[in-house]
Structure formats: structure tokens, C-alpha cells
Image (cartoon, rainbow, N blue to C red; front, side, top):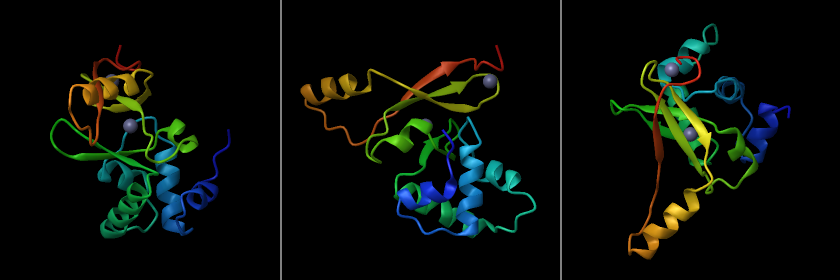
Amino acid sequence: MKRDPRNILQQYKLKNTPVRVSVLEVLLGSRVALSHNDITERLKGKDIDKVTLYRTLNSFTEKGLTHKVPTEDRNWLYAIFDEDLLRPATDHYHAHFVCNKCDKIYCLPVEEHQSMQNSSIKMGFKVLSSEVRLHGLCPVCQ
Ligand SMILES: [Zn+2]
Ligand SMILES: [Zn+2]
């Protein structure tokens, strides 16, 4: 499937700006979640300052286009999970795989997410957000 950043922005009711298109292209081109620094590095040559990048990522996240992934050392990474683009923004069911060797965080599809939530609700817990996290070695590091 060819994903045109402009169409995706439109789909998420975000105004088309050159900055948004560039940042979105970087995120779409990555299999792993990216930090501010990672994104800045990949935007080299494009004149996008820190504040603008911060705002851009915030507006993406507000609209449910990107999601934030906490790192082990309490930073935030940003990611787009391909399958999420086909689903409603509130329906982000996937797991995160953290590689013990390269520290990269991958988004992975999960099947059992809903049943996990349901059993928490049955036990009287109110689930506000959830993250399934797996640790191990990514395909590159094995
Ligand atoms: Zn790895
Ligand atoms: Zn993810």
C-alpha cells in the first residue's frame, strides 16, 4: 500500500504543511519508535527547529496519528504503527518489543490485548491506558 503523507494528514484532519509532511515521512519510514533526536537527525538539511518539531509531534499525537512510547530511561519516543492507520485512533492495540542489545523499540501487532483488558475490568480495575511490552533480541541483533 502506497501511503501518501498528504492523504494521511487529511485523514487525521491535520493541515498540510511542509514540516508535517517531512516529519510524517520520517516516521513512516522507520520500523522503530524514534526520539526527538532521531527525528532531527533524519531531517538533516531541512530547517526545522526544536520547538516546531515538538509542536508537530504533539499535534500528531493529539489526533491519534502517532503514539508516544516511554523508554526504559524515562524519555519519550514517537511511532506510527502501520495497522493503526487503518483503525480508529482510540483503537491502538499493539505491543512494544524492546531489544536488550540495541535498545530499539518496535511496534508489534497483538491478538490478545482485548481479552487482557476484559479480565482487568472483570476484576474491578478501570483501565485507562495500557501497554504490552516484550523484551528480547530483535531480528537484527540475533
Ligand atoms: Zn536489536
Ligand atoms: Zn507502538
